[in-house]
Image 1: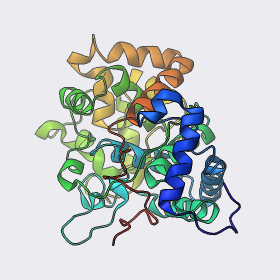
Image 2: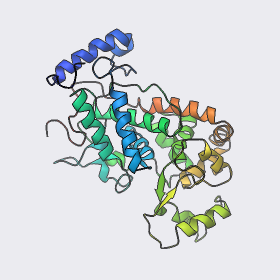
Image 3: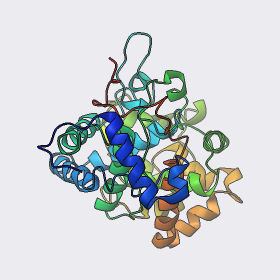
Length: 341
């Protein structure tokens, strides 16, 4: 790739360069339009380092940002595939996925993605898609937090549409195990290992009180706490999230190592200290006994096993309906809007 001071590369020229590079390094799989780890080796060889630098800088003022960025990738891929549709603002005739209930006033990190995009546009204009930025940011966020690294498969294009209704149906904090399993199957992930491994992303980050108050005071409309919730942990959370207290107050998903990517999420589930109902369901639901609970046990006893499965499941998730057809996708110049707008 020419240095940043060179003239702007046209989208068609960038695409030709990318194809030549893919055919050289990616073989038949790349030629078939599949994703590959070395997609930008010729057209933007410093893409990973550029995104990493933006994330390190952002983390200095926002310790939550790594968890927020991996959540963006998750919420994007589960809605019409990994096409950066989540990043689009509303425009005439199309409502943003940001406004859907699971994302509204909850999904965050968009300015950091925009900063990474701007840095990449300075270095290699019109080359790196916003969808690939989300995939890179997720892996970098995990690795910088002490978790595993993996070869990020790249070559996604950005979509030109959103799916507001699909975003309303993301896996949610109040979902029971059968619903969680169905939602994972619906996007082509398995409802055991992928479900448990990717849920382990809750080993870092923060969550609002509104997502636990039901478990503390009125579980399933019983006016009683969730019986699966450890009593001492419940007392601790009741202090943090009093009845009728501020719904948006933040709490650590993992009270032991809140900013580290490790297997403490699973050791917490083992002693009924999962913050979200959807987390504890993986261990405590009666249907979990022969499905997800043994995987929770394995990951709780072996961080290495969790890291290995998490990396594999992230690669699978990143390959949900990737958009690679130039007639249907593009490399957006700005992640919040399509190029024609």
